[in-house]
Image (spheres, helix red, strand yellow):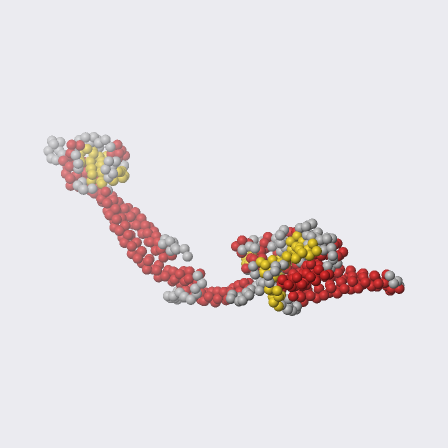
Amino acid sequence: MKKVNIFQSMQWKIIIIMILLLLLAMQVIGSYFAQRLETDLRANFEENIDERLEVLSDNLVKALVKERPEDGTGPTLEADVREIVQLYGRSDAYSQLQVMDRQYRIIGTNTQEEDIGKLTGNSNVRTAIIYDNSTREMQRDQQTGERRLIRIVPLYDNNEPLGAIYLEASMEEVFAQVENINGIFLNGTLIAIFVSTIVGILVARAITKPITEMRRQATIMSRGDFSQKVNVYGTDEIGQLAITFNDMNEKIRLANHTTEEERQKLSSVLSNMSDGVLATNENGQVTLMNEPASLLLAKTFEEIKGESIIDVLQLEDKAIDLMDFQEAGSLTIDFSDDDQLFLIKANFSVVQDESENFTGLITVISDVTEQEKEEKERREFVSNVSHELRTPLTTMRSYLEALTDGAWEDKEIAPQFLEVTQNETERMIRLVNDLLQLSKMDHKEQTMHKERVNVVPFFHHVLDRFEMNKEESVTINRYIPKDSLFLWMDKDKIIQVIDNIISNAIKYSAVDGTIHFRVVKDKQRIRVSIADQGPGIAREKLDKIFDRFYRADKGRSREVGGTGLGLAIAKDIIVSHHGQIWAESMEGKGTTILFTLPLITRKRGAKK
């Protein structure tokens, strides 16, 4: 499971939210408090200035309207103004205090005494004297940055201008108090944030601890472990969530157990099935395949997962819709190539939900190549047996009808007709016997009487019998070792094999032809080859000459006779002796039939 970033965890989200809420509250309160404090301090400062200016202006008006002796005795106006300024205009906040008369001359100041008697250059003062306008404004010194309150108060007596007061009062002390209080407020805010962080951590832990345990348990559940439970810390919403989580854990455990049992059953069934199984979703995409299906299709599940079942089974040319597979029932699909026949039978079953909506398809596939081969062989076998029986029966019926019609009275023709009838009868008997023998071999009903035989004199005996009965125009050359070679075998069966092979060689040999009979010892077996000088067999037909009723040259076979079962019988006999049989041939250069038989293995230490 991906680790949660510290700033993405719920615990820290709660802490950060609490801090942000506190900061927001403190910011709102601080902004309001600082603004209100600054406003009140400025108002108090200006009110104090106004009160002092009012006292100062009253005394200055009295001094300006005071009658003075013409002889110059008594205090002068400048002396009275200086005394009033020193008495009522003394303050640390006053940066500059000047008193002007109606002629705009400076008659009093709290700073530079040398300015007394000079005309003021301040146009605002002149305007205030002329129009009786009181001025109040805030200015900042361009060099020092000091903030000052500028007051110009005109002096009038009965609407008669007497002069004006110009005052510059520094407000830095007011703003210093505001900044000091803001600093105190900031420190309090930091302390509150620290305390709220501690409280937030404790609260967040209390809230997120059960959730963290549930997250940890969910991770454990995702790994398939449902044995643990989460702790319930109360009856609140989180406690109820923990109880519900434990109930869900138990239900999932039971459902998972049931699902696992069903999965194991399904897996066991699929694994032990000899047929292949393919499952698809509602879109026909393969979602499941067992091992037999993988072997039949020569593809792994990873290779065809998600592919369409139509593409996997190569049914593009069938133009069958997914919903039509149920009606199709089963299909035989040809996967053959140029070298090998390969047929697969597919049975389809549609999967539907409770609402009978199509949800998928189950396809069972099996290899029916051998079944088709056997069915084809059965049809060919029935056809060949029917043909082989019909030919002699038709001949016999024709000759018997001729005899019935009066040919039996002809002493020259009747014996010929009877001889033909007798030959055809014997041909049918040989055919039936061969069929009975093949049937016994197929059903394992034929008993083998094996014995220890020295095949050297045995082969000579068999060939001697052929030498006595063969056509004089065919010669049999023997290549048989002089040393004794012992085999376990059924002598009658091996004689039948050699009879069938040599009989075929004689039938297909040319006039004055030669048959070569050769025996070679090859390790723990002997190899027997019987070669003729007949017309030979095409390469593509060599593997088929051991099939039942197969004839490489059907026209020639009809002329020389035979049932077409000789080599098929020979093959079954050799295989039952744990040997092998095959043919080698080239057209126009004769045919060689070869077979092997195992020698008797000598035990170590046994005497010869």
